[in-house]
Amino acid sequence: MKLAVLKERRNGETRVAATPETVKKYIGMGLEVAVEQGAGLASGMTDAAFAEAGATIAASAADALAGAGIVLKVRAPTDEEFGAIGKGALLIGTLAADADAAGRYAGAGIDACSMELLPRITRAQSMDVLSSQANLAGYRAVIEGAGAYDKGFPMMMTAAGTVPAANAFIMGAGVAGLQAIATARRLGGRVSATDVRPAAMEEIKSLGASFVGYEDEESKAAQTAGGYAKQLSAEFYAKQAEVVAAHIAKQDVVVCTALVQGRKAPTLVTAAMVATMKPGSVIVDIAADAGGNCALTQPGEMVVTENGVKILGFTNWPGRLPAAASALYARNLLTFLSTFWDKEAKVPKLPEEDEIVKGVTLTRGGAVVHPLMKPAA
Image 1 (cartoon, rainbow, N blue to C red):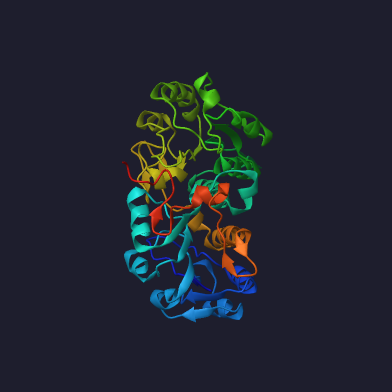
Image 2: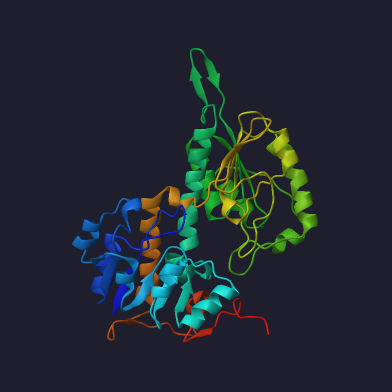
């Protein structure tokens, strides 16, 4: 069976879905691997490295896809790529699919697996693309915030005087937020953090940060069984905002990481809060891809407010560390495929009843099978 790895064409996407390391493993599983020319260059992986690993270098996406039974992607295929994927092929990536997209995959006879829908269970941890990429995003966010902040991050004592440590506030203590806390601490900042989920307080404190937040009965049920944050009521967010507003006014760097699966990111930092911040302070909004946690975030841009606050609304934060992000993402996909691999037949075997398979499978055999993607009756 042939496996195709395509060059990502969507704007700003620097990652690739396989590495020379994983290509060797796929070939060891009995697959023939075709990598589109230039697929890994933005991640520092040359065609020669892929060829040395045993892959065939295809001159175009169409050549890579010709006869491919498995297609690996980072993002959803473009229209050009979509038209070249063969009927019956297994497409694996972070497809960000909705009901319309799932219907399109089904209509083309593509069996699509969207890895961002992976259930957060112990058995699936090594396949969890959201966690692997969020970890890097949290790290990069603090590094970018420290670079944009016009004073030193740690306390520095010199003969000319002392530069105080930066006050860093992390909003959201999921995978990205916890990494942001750890990174800000390593850089020497005074770190505080908040999250609506009840389990987050101890995780925040365990990393040496102080907890800031509002708690009530609603917040005790603020986490899904799958480990994701729930969308809470407007009343809760208003009370939470009251608690953090005074805190934000004293901060030098604020990192926003709060996401709700499948929905627009909640607005946690209002324009009024930004107006209370000191000139030269920085807001880093990891949630910019989903609209942003800050009301003034411009996705894809850095803006400076009238009172001198810098807001970093860059998108695709993992893509700002393309080599590391690609390596982790590629291993996630390899683990998924190798877990559901028929060694004798040398083909993928995705049991419909398996919890992981059910979680990620959008379409199968020309039908939409994911309950969240089925069209309304």
